[in-house]
Length: 97
Image (cartoon, rainbow, N blue to C red):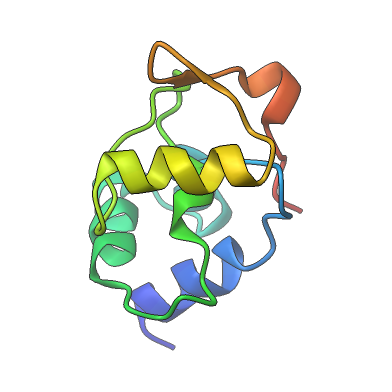
């Protein structure tokens, strides 16, 4: 299975109203390729893979292939609040199993 496909399988597990980090996804793949995870998500065109649920390790929103404003809008729609472009990972973080 290709790297991008493995990333997408993990991202699908993040429930509505929660976020995970690029780093957690990379660690789940047994690697440290955090940027490669971001690149895979940026290339995603499938709206059933909820890339907006992935943020930086410090809670910052990060990029999104449909724009940062859209990412914030989608998160807000799910009940995830961004304060100063950051997500409270203690409140909204999801530990990938």
